Length: 206
Image (cartoon, rainbow, N blue to C red):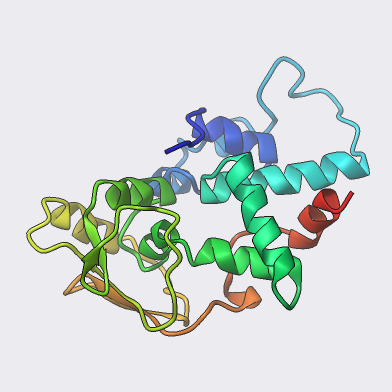
């Protein structure tokens, strides 16, 4: 499974804002953005030219880092969204939100998407009673996600639920039984990722 193994705090600093890639650590004074609010690298504190292309590129990179995927897979989401009816940018974000690892995170069963991806990859979750270990699996309305019976990760998941904030209205989560149900597809206003998707569409449309 291809993924970005670079330092996560540097990724947040590069985008100039918290992307919450490390879960609860991002809420403490140990957060890289809090300690050094300038981009990483030798020229991080220098003045950078804000061209149209650069702004669009940074928005795409931000979205890729939030969802933890690389360029080829991200572009595939864009192409799939472009073939569907509706606004391409919004549809792309909806596809990203419906990834199984994102559902596990958004339901409060993991402290970060990285942790959720690892839990899925190691086979700790089922969808409609069937074990699924593919983080990019597209969950659909009506699907029920549950932790695998006798999973050794159950306590880790329970610990993560104690840090859970607000669960989006399109999901229903039961933290006692460690199950969640997808009630419907997410709407744009319910996507918490701080991304201007239209800039990504403009970049790929060139």
